[in-house]
Each structure stands twice: as structure tokens, then as C-alpha cells.
Length: 137
Image (tube, rainbow, N blue to C red; front, side, top):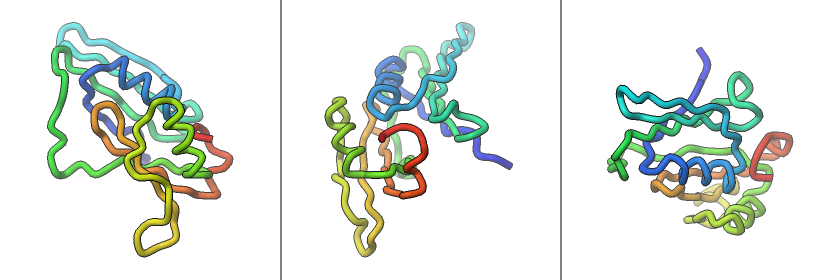
């Protein structure tokens, strides 16, 4: 088995695409529209997405502006080479950093949190191994 993608329902597809591409540095990989069932999809990722990396699938159900995330959803995590620099870049691009970069409580791993325009939380985890990866450099 292989991890392929995570799907998020969004209230405005273009706004979400702009956040994931312009603020987080992902690439828009492909889009599709289903007029019969009234929904649009956009797949985004780093390094061309699958098979190198998993993707984010943004789903817009036509006419639905927002969703209740419930209590089960936690966050998506992205590895970054420098969480402090990533936060500065995200803020400069208009993104919402909701937890500044710093060590995790009770540990030494440096993390930060960002919230996308639909309220989904994204954790940035500083990892030296991700210095060669895509996005948020």
C-alpha cells in the first residue's frame, strides 16, 4: 500500500488553490469538474505529487460555502528545513500562522502551525532531512 492523498472539502476552490500554491508553495497538478454531481476537484502537491509524494485533494461541492470540521480532524503535517523561515515566508505571502515556530512542549522538535482559509490546520515540522524537499524553503 502507498499513501496517495488527503481530501479536504473547501468553500471556495480558487481561494484554497491560491493558499496552497502561493502561500505553501505547492503545485497545482490537475483539476476536474463533474457537472452532473456538481463538484470540482483540484489536486496539489510538491515535486509533482504521486508517486514521489502524497497529494492534497481539494473538493468544492457547488454552493457549499463552509463546513463544520467536527472534533475528529486534527491537522496535516509538512516537513520543512527551517520552521522559522517557513513562518516568515508564509506571513509575507498573507498566510495565517497560528502558532509561531518553536520547540514542541516537552521536547526539542521545532514546530509551527498555520491555518488555511477554510480553517484546516497545517503543522510545520522542522526536519533537516527535508532541506532537499520541495516547497516552503
